[in-house]
Image 1 (tube, one colour):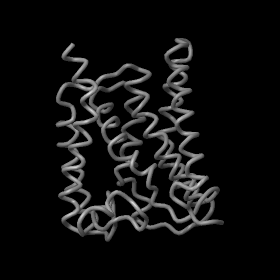
Image 2: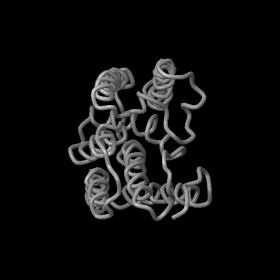
Image 3: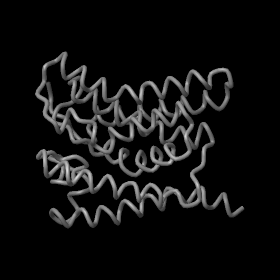
Length: 226
């Protein structure tokens, strides 16, 4: 089993496959009305399966787990659960969370995965299953379903992110985990490498998070002005 290489051939091919799948689902949904429910429900199911799949594969292959890998408290785990429910229920608020968390957070994970082993390791499969379907869901909502966030939705999701921050810091302190990478930076290369050391990088992360949320809201605010 070879080590994972960021932006290596396997990583780039995986990103290409994710982009192709997202494009295919969006085009099929837009062009074929009879396929809309099956596609939406199928995508929702795949997104919701992220966490159970991770637990099942860990059990089948008996690879080491701890509270930090079995509890669904990473932002991307929560985004998968929320995104799947948003697709099933078409909830406006849940869709907003899935959109902003998916593209501002989970997309970063796809580009700089915190992985040790490459394909076809269980770690690789579960990681990209989770992150890819979260990002596809975040793109599918506005591009396929033509969903739009409310004018100040980025403030709403940023406020919820502060609640996650407090909960994440508390759980990490009590359990010795690293949910949200709020206890220490990832072991592999990531955007956080350009930030100061803990705890100061959390403050920078807050600013970057809000900037990303704001930028993601701009395409919709411009449409509202027309």
